[in-house]
Image (cartoon, rainbow, N blue to C red; front, side, top):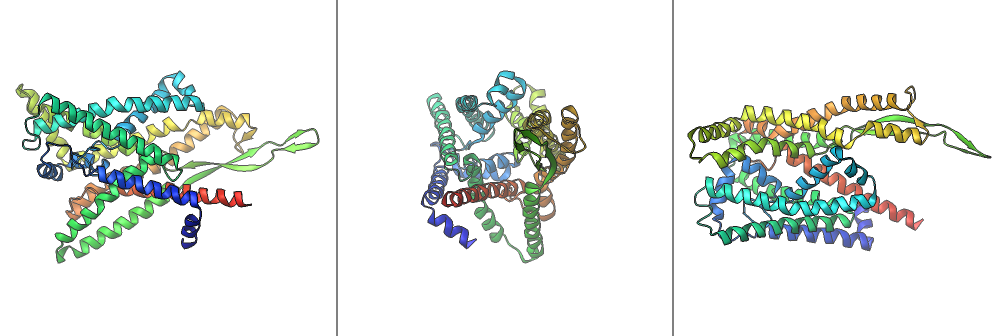
Amino acid sequence: MLDKLEQIWKAKDLRNNILFVLAMLVIFRLVAHIPVPGVNTVALKNLFASNQILGLLNLFSGGGMQNFSLVMMGVAPYITSSIIFQLLGMIVPSIEEMQKEESGRQKINMWTRWLTVPLAAFQAYGMITLLRRGSAGILGDITPFNFFVMIVTITAGSIFLMWIGELITEKNVGNGISLLIFAGIVAVLPTAIQRIFITFDQTQLFMLIGFVVIGLITVVGVVIINEGQRNIPVQYARQVRGNRTFGGTSTHLPLRVNMAGVIPIIFAISVVLFPSMIAQFLIHAKTAWVAQAAQETINLFNDQLFYGIVYFILVFAFTYFYTEVIFHPAQVAENLQKQGGFIPGIRPGKNTSDYLSATTHKIILVGALFLGLIAVLPLVMRYFTGIQSLSVGGTSLLIVVSVVIETVKQIESQLTMREYDGL
């Protein structure tokens, strides 16, 4: 590892890129502590500490939502916009064709940025309205002008983070959006650890040791699942052109256990939080049955058992759904056939597509179960340990470990490229 660090330091451009990324992350953390004017931050922190749903939202904003900061929405609007265009690629043939070309992908990226603006404004409006109606003392009497200024400020903060994320991505030292989420999660960990030590009791010693052991096992499991793949053998037919022979080689097609990454968890969180968020708006409705239904919805989703079961099922289902979005067996089979490749014992064309589809579904079963267990791990840990921290859950560990692995791989590829340049 020391040799790798020395190589990174000697490579001037790579060193400058890493320092630039670190500087951008520092700027992000500084902005995350600048609150929007007119907010009672103490009352806001107490609300987020006592509300599980808002705590999850705060986790993915890197603590910015708890501070009601300029970047309180984080990169969630940009992620939502990206997901929308990925889904449209399955429905609209013209967008699917654009995704296959470089110029088309650039145009889709531009549309994604434009869509991020109204999404950020809408989410900012929803959060401000929710805090005004449901939590007295956090936001005082806001004039329409101040309300408008808040929405514009929070929207600008999300666009600022989107810009920083794209600048980081251009440096080829990891994905910018993922690194911003990673920085937000890591920044919350010291506070959670400090809270544990402050409230430490000798009777909790074995519980904390068990908590650390489970955390280490979870990290190892995340690495194994993220790196796990099944290699499908592929044979290329030998072709003779004149006096030269081409092909005849054997290789493999890697099918990853966790193709979807953390996207299913993000999808599931959005869906599972939606009923409670709507109920928060309707809890003070003048119609009695509407207010009662909203209260019952909130009570239902506050039930840990019901919440955990729904959350697990959604993560499991979205893992299969998103894998279908990003992996197309028919297209892979077609490309293999065009290149003269085939899977031994399987006929090219539809038979290959069916074989890849069936194999993928078997592999994804393990990945879906793993993601589901990781998602509900905080609930299980809270039940057995009594620790109320959401920032050290399985989802956080999954994101942190995945981003670290991805970043390390990109840095190693940069070093390998420089070795080839030297040769």
